[in-house]
Each structure stands twice: as C-alpha cells, then as structure tokens.
Length: 275
Image 1 (cartoon, rainbow, N blue to C red):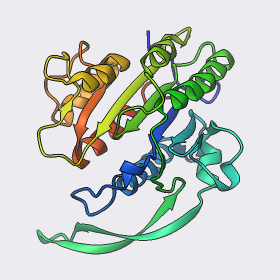
Image 2 (cartoon, rainbow, N blue to C red):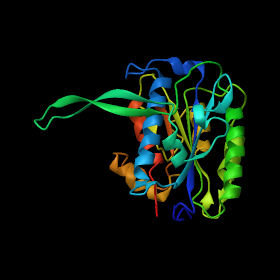
Image 3 (spheres, rainbow, N blue to C red):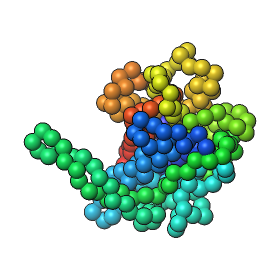
Image 4 (cartoon, rainbow, N blue to C red):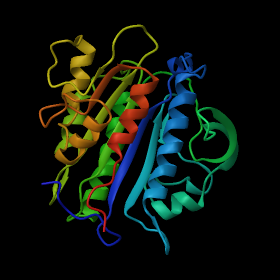
C-alpha cells in the first residue's frame, strides 16, 4: 500500500485543518503569535509544494490542496478567488494568492556571514485567533471532504490530512470521527491523519512517538487519532534528526515549539512517486 504513482492523471491531495481559536493569539519564541507562525509555515509549505511540482511546462497538478479553519466557525481557510469550496488543484493555488508580500530573509554572504535579502512571499492563508475550539465539527467537515475526494479518485495515493491545534476540543470528543476518517481509503490505502499540538509552555516536545507512555490524557487522545508513519517518510524524518522514527511511530507531535512545527509540515508534505 501507499505505492501508487502520483501524476496529473492520478493526483493525491493534502487537506490542512487549522485551529484558529482565541488561544492561538499566544506569543511564541519567534515573537509571533501561534496563529501568525502557523500561517507563515502553511504559506511557505504551499509555495514549496508548488516549486516541487513545477516543470518546464508549468505547475503540474500532482496534488489537490485545501484548508479548513476552525474557531468562531468551521469554514474554508482560503479566501478571495479560492473561496466557495475546499480542495483546489495546485495550479489554481499557484494562480490565486491573496497577495504577494515582500519579506526579508538572511542568506550566506559567501564570507562566513549573513546578509539580508528581499524576497517575494505569496500569502494564501491569513492568521486569525478568536472563539472556541470546535474540533469535532472541523473533523466532521473534513470527513465529508475526504469522502468525496476518495470517491472521485479510487486509484490515487490516499489523501493526507494535517491537523494543527493548540487546545482541547470544546464541542465534544473528536476521536470517533477521526478514526472513521482514517478508515476512508482509495485502492492504494487508508487516508493519513497527522496531528500536531503546539504549545508555548516550557518542556521537551514529544514528536513522532511509538508509545503513549510519556503522554497525558489529552496527548494520548491525539496519539490514537494519528496515523502510523508511512514507510516512505521514515528516511526523511531520520534525515531531519528524528533518528528513532520507524514504521511503529505515530505521525504526531505534542507540545511542539516552532522548530518542530516547521519539521512536521516539511516531512508531512514530501511528495513521493511523482511522475
């Protein structure tokens, strides 16, 4: 399983489910709020997906991509020309950013130092933080999207859901819906659900564990909601320093800080078997 070639005729998909509740306004060590930092990482992830899937003839639609945001409401996290549905082809994403910002990044100067350089930064997803944490409703909405996509792509590499939250669900236990979502499948395997809990609290994050033993009650809930590590992503995780990762690990992070957030998105969206 998880061996189907990803092509324009047989695309896969990524669905990002992002917590935008009031607690996402807490500040991180990056001097950004959680909401701002996650938005930056998500926008960069979308841009990197586009770059990875660009060839001489333009952006190839190897993936459908969508964002569900939940806080005051559960809705599409994309706006502007991408409002109105959830999943879009990668070329539609590329063609319709909300805006292009000018950012400053530091790059090597060739003499052992760093120099500031202006760069273009496309933005598709804006940070928001208000309301409660209707995680169960967000998962239910996501399950509808996943079901429709799987029915339309019976031979594709299954859809990957990347869920990011900083708090406990305020509308009931989401685990039953999450378990049902993981059982949705194409002929190539069950859909993958990756869960990332982020925190500003001190302490060592737990990233890609094989056991729930070191987790509290809420951590164990998210652990069991998360899929096992796909084989093709194990070497990528090990290259990023997560040397203990194997096929018994869960694709799950708990009480993660900014470094783990970046790694989680990067590893979770690495294309495989592109044609």
